[in-house]
Image (tube, rainbow, N blue to C red; front, top):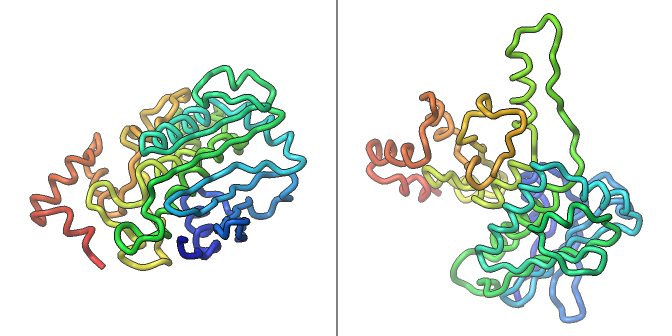
Length: 291
């Protein structure tokens, strides 16, 4: 049986990477498997949702658990905007590409999460699970159990968060302000959208894609999950109706590589930064070996 994990440590990293603060608790099921529960902090559990993470032998089962009176929340999730729906699909497609299975039951009927018809229905009941087997849980070699549990929990949480109602930031014509003011408001809207950051880290991980720098491994648990997210296409060039693809449009970069990326217009690509590292150090992988 896999070792028991500190739910607070899991919740701390998931909160950091998704931008939504979670409270956590832990219990065991009848088979002795640990179940870690995450609930949005500061909200009445009956009116919000929870995420249950069941840690079995070489297997994880993650479930969306709506509160007893979460009907208004489900309705709001069914009305997610195009950006939220795109993030939802992108995260789950990436999970499936890594061997996970997704179950999405709407009002008691199994549906495909990618079908457009699900958005036309009234969401009265939602059963949403992700399962991943053949994991190296409980083994002495390979990726530490904690990292496996945390990474899959972050992925699932990112999918859920993509459908949550978020504060809207509309671009407005401001009388007396320069033309660029409207563009600035739009830039801020994309920068603030936590769904995109959560999805990018769920898909790509929190290590720098250019140099391999992982702050948690280098500086310890206090730096777990820290990374910057870089827009492959400059935010100022995105139209107001552009729907970001977190897999193609966003990449995690350490502050150094992120700064280098913007030393040129258009920015250096990840592959170009890797080339610069090879010229400067001989091997970019050496950076990831620090610590």
